Amino acid sequence: MIWAVAHSNVALVKYWGRAPGPGHQPAGTSVSLTLDGLASGARVEERPAGSADRVGWDPPGPVAELSRFVTLARARLGIGHPLDVLITSNFPVAAGLASSASAYAALTTALAALAPGRPSADGLAALARQGSGSACRSMLGGFVQWRPGADAGAVTQLAPPEHWPLAVLVAVTDAGPKRVPSREGMLRTRATSPFYEAWLTAGGVDLTVVREAVRARDLPALGAATERNALRMHAAALGAEPPLLYWEATTVSVMREVWRLREDGVPAFFTVDAGPQVKVLCEPADADRVERALAGVPGVLRVLRSRPGGAPRTGPEPPSWAAPHASPGPPGDEKGPAA
Ligand code: 2P0
Image (cartoon, rainbow, N blue to C red; front, side, top):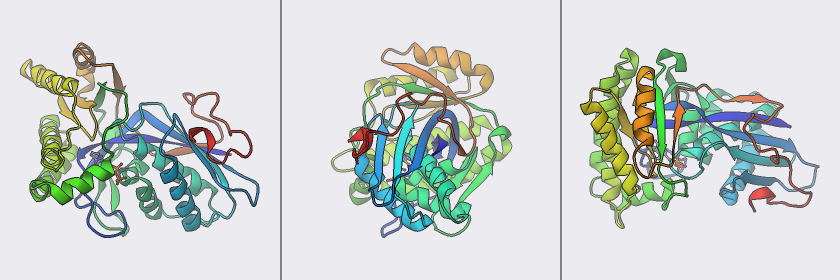
């Protein structure tokens, strides 16, 4: 049995649009920050020859997609024997916190450890992307760039986590599943939003600013570009038919609170993904004050605190936060705990 743990990531320049055609290619280049603390664990164990793969999520998640991924990954990595797979996360799943990114990065890492060969890092990033596009960014720590293309270097580390110890606070405003999955939302935006092409063009400009801001550790420049990139992604999504509104009332209240903090002289900047949560970037010295301000916004359920995190890792033991029952289900339960 092997465990792998990978972290979620937050996009500073968003991936919101696939290029038409096969292969899960993004329409534009995105940049993310891997988040320490928001983690998924993948436990993988061999099953007896002749049995079927058994997959599950704890708490429950989309089993059919996970099953398809395991089939694909086994073929690509040359793993002949059937597998027992369990994915578990220490934060709300399918709620716009990139749980699929950490889940598929963890699973890809665990499967690679069981593979007979030594798959390349580029090959593993390309595989993780088949589970969830943003998962390829969680295959590396720190500040990560993902550009279109399946070739070597499509996913690269711009800077390691220790380059810039930013604080990232996550205001959880709603712990339920999101209404429209990212995949469907992206397709709908591309197919129906008149703002889609403008969004892609604007993203290219933000990319240049964000890369330079990361290099220079310039928070006002990074924050301004990150905030406007998120708002423009949502503007494109709002222009879809039917419209995609991922925000709740509390989401907007938190964004306004971040602007109020800035008026008070605290350099804090938000971003919002395909869900109602708000992620806020600030200097570590301001993190307590920002956390108190976010927690005080009516409707905020809790505030998670994070910072730049590292690459996935493997080991024989479950992570400390994994539920004690995160062990194989009863024999013959082919769908596992998430069925
Ligand atoms: C991102 N998101 O860059 C953007 C911002 C959501 C909003 O990547 O269909 O689950 O598996 O390629 O990776 C979430 O989309 O989508 C995402 P698929 P994924 O983080």
